[in-house]
Image (tube, rainbow, N blue to C red; front, side, top):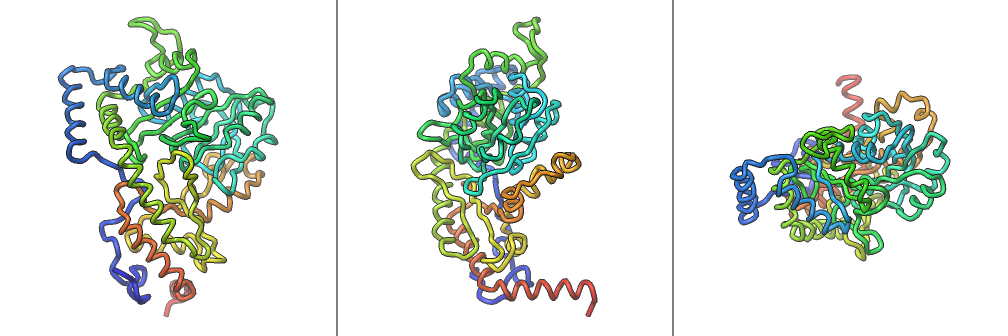
Length: 411
C-alpha cells in the first residue's frame, strides 16, 4: 500500500506494508525439480549409508567449488568459522593478526578462539574493505598475518595487501564468506593469499544450510588442512597432526550441490533486485547505494546503503525504525564495529586506536532486504517507504522528540 499520509506509517499506528516480514539474507531454497534433485541426493546418501567422512557428495561439492573459483584445491568444512581457524592453524599463524574492524564478529572471534590477537585496522570509505594505508603502521615483530575480508562480495585491494605482506614477510588469508562467484580483475576469488575461506551458511546466496570451504593453490597446505579437518588422520589409524572434527556431512553437501545448480538463476534474481534499488534510490539526498562493478562477476547478494543524516534529514537508526515497523527487517551491519565489541573493547590497544571510517560506517550503514526470496515489486515498495520517510523527515523527527519528551515528563 502506498503511504500518502503520515498516519499511514506503521510507526504512527498504520498497518505495516509487509506483515509477513521482509528479511535480509532469507535462505534461497530449492523448489520443484531442484527439490527433487536434493531429495534424490539425500536418498542416495541414505542408501549408501555413507553420511560423513569425506563421502562422494562432499567430494563432488569440493570439485564444483574448485571449478567455479579456479582454485587448485577446495576442502569442505562444517562452517566457515572453523574453516578460518583451521586455515590459520595450518598456516602456523602466531601472535598478532591484522583484521578489518568493520566485519562480522566471527572473523575476529575465530582468530581469538585459537589464541591469536586480532589487531583492528580501518577500511576504505568506497568499498568498506581493508585499507592498505591502515595496515602498515600496525605491523610489529609479533605480526604473523593479515586476514582481509572481501566484504559484500567486493574484493579487497589484493595487490596492495600482497605487496605489504611480502615486504614485511607476513602471510595473507582471505575471509571470502561473501565472495563466492565474484571476481577481481577478471579472475575468480579463491586462489589469493595462502588460502581463502568461503561460507555456505543458510544466509549466503549459495547455501548448504551450514558449511564452508577452504580454497588454496598450495598443495602441501591443502593436504595439511584436509588432515586437520579430521582429527589429523593420514590413514585409518595414523595421526600426524593436531586436528579437530570439522568435516562436512553428505546431507550438507547435497544442499550445497543443489544450490550451485541454481546459481545462475539466483544471481540473475539478485541482480534484478539490486538494479531496482539502484534505480529507485537514485537521486535521494543522503542515501548512497554501494556500487558493484558490472565489468566483474558479482553475486549481488547485498543491497548496502549509507545514510547521511545531515542530508537525509533522518539518521540511519531513525530510518531503520520506520522500516522495521513496516515489516522491512533491514539491518545495521556491522554495528558497532569489532573494536567496540567485547572482549576487544576492554583491550587497552583498541581503546586508544582511532578508526574513523569504521566509526562512520558503523553509524551509517543500512543493509536492505534482497536476495532471491525478495521480488522487484517488494523492492520498489521498500524504496517508496524510504522516499516517503525522507520527504516527511522533519515531521518524523519532531514526533520522535515529542514522544521522548512525553515519556520523560508525562502528559
